[in-house]
Amino acid sequence: MTRLTDGMVKDIIRSLDSANEMLIALTGMDTVELACDAAGITKDMIDLDGIKVGIVPVTSGKGIITKFSESVAEIVRRLGMEASVTQAADVTGLAEALSAGAEIVFMADDVTFMAINTKNGRFSNNSYCTAAGYVSALKGAAGGLDGKEVLVLGAGRVGAIAARMMTGMGAAVTVYDIDEERARALSESIPVKVAADVNAALIVHDLVLNAAPGAIDGRFVKEGAIISSPGIPFPFDGLGIKRAGTIINDPLDIGVAVMAVQCASFSRLRRQDAAHGT
Ligand code: PYL
Image (cartoon, rainbow, N blue to C red; front, side, top):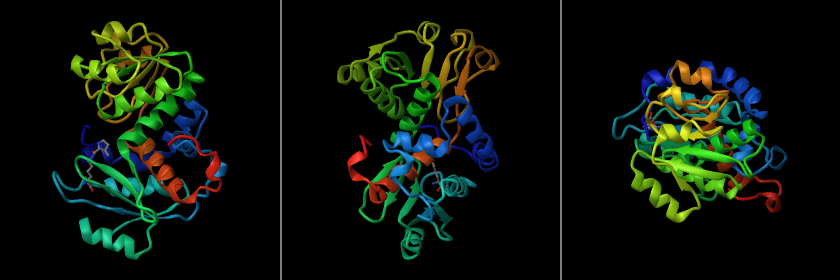
């Protein structure tokens, strides 16, 4: 997982409105609808208003990323929840959030980013939720994935989860990873094909979920391709942007929104029977 930097995070808050507009235009869903879809519920099944959320800065490893916690808080506020960043960091910050009655607590070190439901201890993970969010975005932009061919770039945490989800939705998934062994290992646990050459695979796929850290050579992006590409750094050159029909990308928004909705669903669902697979 590529670690965010201060520079990548500094503009998130001011770009949230346009990111939401982009989502509606490209997928037909706003951030709340997409987050619910990814969490396996519908908006009418949950009341997000006023849920108390604490975001606790964590100083371990490479330390605090400027405005990371504030960005998470703002993304969560836009879902209707009442989010605040604790004054203290680490364990003292966790104690502060719990004492303030937080129903959900967000914390991230350099390896794991999670949202914990304090009512029952269940938790959401950023890798799972980012994969689910970007699968929902691709599904929305493509008008469904059942019976469609999808290329997944990267068989790491996000790519492997996304590949598993999309095969479960009836997509014919091909996976490429720079470490072919990792792609092969995945193909032994789920019915995916393995691509040996990234450019040969890109040029024949209309639907792509990019969960790899490297840059993409725009010359091989198929004309009009729909590309769902979480995270940072933004991997497309000018030619890639020109050739693609749709590129869905953000540094943090979708993953955090799915975490918040999924974590809230662990204690707030109106109708337990209707929830399907989260
Ligand atoms: C959650 C992001 C998405 C991509 N990479 C992940 C990352 O950068 N993780 C590190 C987050 C560190 C946060 C720091 C703080 O400010 O509390 N511990």
